[in-house]
Length: 132
Image (tube, rainbow, N blue to C red; front, side, top):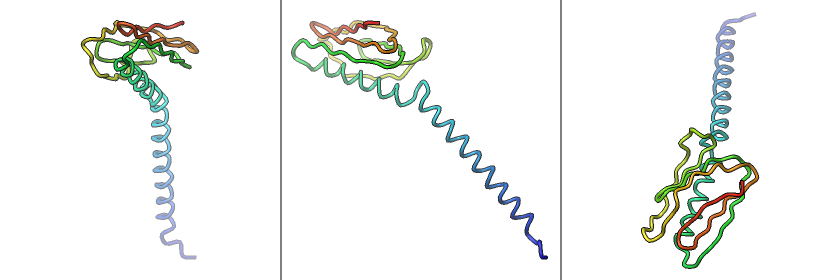
């Protein structure tokens, strides 16, 4: 039997297996990052709540909006931005909304509990509160 090159094939297959394992580990780390602190959920939530704030800025009449949450979040709002994070010490993801100097927004820091809701209320300014 001619076994010339059989060791080369073995090393090549071993190399392929190692490369596939590295790709699999990197893929798992990427998925964990998406599900983690700055994942798509926090990004979506910050943009969604920021757009709600933009809507309240532009509404002509008083409006009250209730936003239901399913996770624990820290919610910070000031005159120019809104940030959301899952941990107390994290900076979170920021959304900069349109600024209206005629509309007052109360500076708020709220820890939103699981299965609670945020209440956005616009009368003369925007007031944000929670039930939990």
